[in-house]
Length: 262
Image 1 (cartoon, helix red, strand yellow):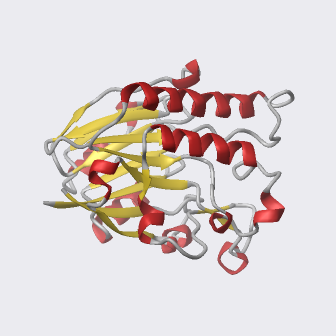
Image 2: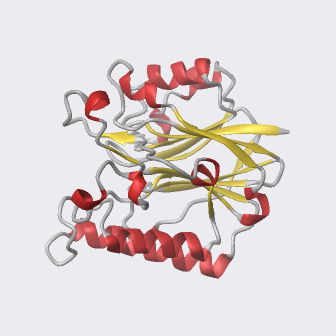
């Protein structure tokens, strides 16, 4: 049975609960993965999501920062989490569907402003986080899995509005792109979005600092949907809901969708 999955950095699930419910009503993904929830799990407004058919949730949270949640119409059991780089942050949670598919929801550290771990601790934490992700995938060899989330890296030249200008900007530096590539290759993950949409510029994030984000269109593709090779051919119909970036009091990210015939 096909199911639709969506990933969205919501930038506060409590502040933007109305946007989440709007997406649920208008787009109705079967599984919705949220990042940067900025809420303890017990304060996520699960009751309003449950009323719309999302009766299952696995989540990890903390007050005011980070936080990841998977909301599902389909039965799902908690499949745990990993604290990569020992940051003590709520940045990963996994849920397993009845069809045996495990969904990993990630919020990779943004990395601060300067792409130099010697002067910017956050950048070092980001690289260490990705390194431990890579090592885990090498050791565990994931199967029948989907990985989604705000990975905070735009890997391709056409994943950013200007490749040359962003080479020294955190999220598109060569060292970050290399770390993400190693992480993806370690699990033999397939980039479903680019499998479906191999050509052309694609963005899922536009800065709040741009007063006219839509016209300027200085975006980056920071949000991703990957799948293991055993199910990658089942993924299709990828899209980014750009319109959501223009909703009232929006997140700076737009939701990314894919359908899997599984």
